[in-house]
Length: 187
Image (tube, rainbow, N blue to C red; front, side):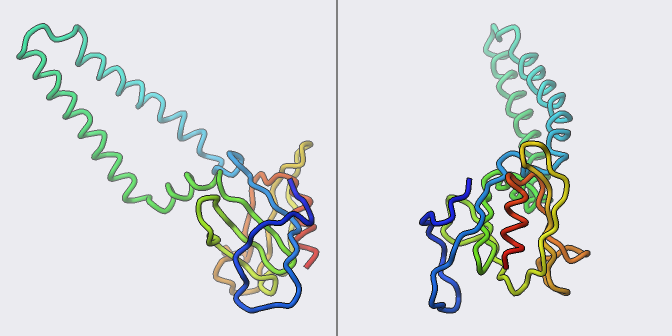
């Protein structure tokens, strides 16, 4: 998961420094990074999808025998698809940031170097977010399971705009979470 001297291309720092940047921790939480309510949302979506499938089946069974029945089945299918598309569009437009974050969450990798912490996705050369070591006070270890996955937080300086109301950034189900806290504590 982590290689101390592995050559990884990181975007250049804003100021030039003499010594090269050393990578202390790299991990991608994968599906563990999804919010804890994602499974519940999927469970509640299943009856909706099943009823949608039933309606499509009811429209096309038995297969339309006349041209009039065929045209009615096509019209009903378009109305059903239009209604579903309308509801989906309304939900996506109201919650675009949340939906984007949930879709992107399994692909985000967290890199901790001796100078900064980066959040990156594989398809973009620029980091999603970067926090320099001067903004971080300490790392806090949460619960850890027997496989080494666990929760952690990074305490930021007072008034940092990236922090929550308590001054932290929380990480859920990180692999090798103790290495992450140690890497942040290395600063």
